[in-house]
Length: 136
Image (cartoon, rainbow, N blue to C red; front, side, top):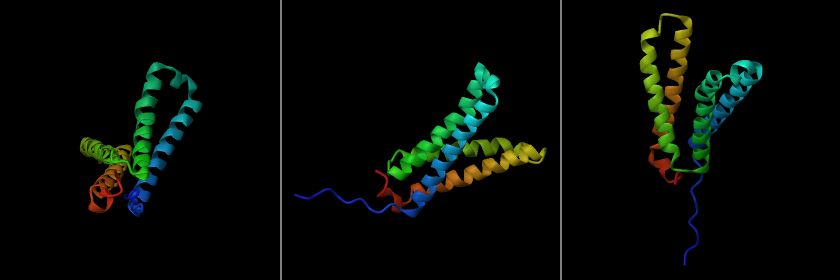
């Protein structure tokens, strides 16, 4: 009779990417709370509440869940991060046309490129052989 199989050590990339996504989710959630506290009249309307929900709370839950799943070794972290990278690719493709028109458009495109780089790198890392033994 064999005992329970010992789990391999957590790879450093899992710790780094998981911690990053967990922190990003916490920061987005804090930003949503800050906006709701500083502009309660806008957040009390249906349109304002839906805007907060779609633009900050749902991405915070998505990033936080992906970070927690990576750190906990759950296999469903891989599709979450892959979908995040695909969405970032679509956002970057949509922002390329307005890249040089205004400084705000350039900043948005730069942020989207950064998200694409991190999510794409994490998706690639999660598909490597080293990580497959950690994610179950």
